[in-house]
Amino acid sequence: MLIKEYRLLMPLRVEEYFIAQLYMVAKASTEETGKKAGEGIEIVKNEPYEENDQGMPPGQYTEKIFHLKSRLPKFVRMFLPEEAMKIYEYSWNAYPRCKTVYRNPWLGDIFSLVVDSLHVQDKGTMENALGLTEAELNKRKVEFLNIASDEVKAVKGEDPSKFRSEKTGRGPLAPDWYEHSDPVMCCYKVCKLQFKKWGLQTKVEQWGQYYGLRNTFVKYHRKLFCWIDEWYGLTVEDIRRMEDETQKLTREKLEKSKMMASSNDSESFDEEYE
Image (cartoon, rainbow, N blue to C red; front, side, top):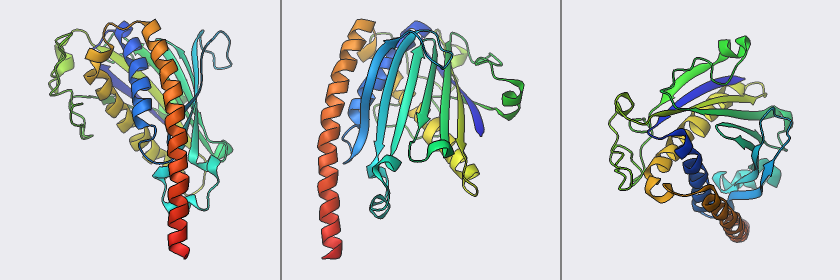
């Protein structure tokens, strides 16, 4: 198992981040679904919970299915079952603490990913924010992520080093913005990734931590900050209404994209074997 702890600093207050994260996830889910044929995010559940088996306080539970079909080559899709191209996400949001578990039924115990998060009004100075055991601390690697100067190329219009918020006056962010900015908070994210397959474990775990997690955190937290004028001032009630609309819209877009993918696959197959 490869354990990485990412400490991602943001120019926000902890209470602002709660709204910002929910807004970003809803909007990004809508944007990503249907972008490619057969690919998208299916929101299965989004409801309050009281009890759970994850040791989390009461909060909001979400269950999603990530359809990854269009990210795989066509010749691979022809021989893999549908379940092999889905990632199931189970999330318990008891903000400021959150826990998310990812599974793949087809891979079973071979694959597991757990992301444990804590959001604190500091600059990433807590040594063991998520209460890891001594054995886990010995395996853990810590990396600070900077949305203003990371090596991941920024998307046009979503570059914190160029963006300035009209509502808050925050930004653009210099490479060392956190040294003199007020507010500053840290998203502590402990990611435990395991892929138990001899000969592939190290490669898959390293790839997953870097491309699947690290770079994704940078990408979407840039969106979160650069969308600040859209979510700033929204209430939890506003967000819940948005989430309801997102659940309906993504379901519709995903169904259309699945039909498109099925049509494209049939056409490609026919053309190849005629």
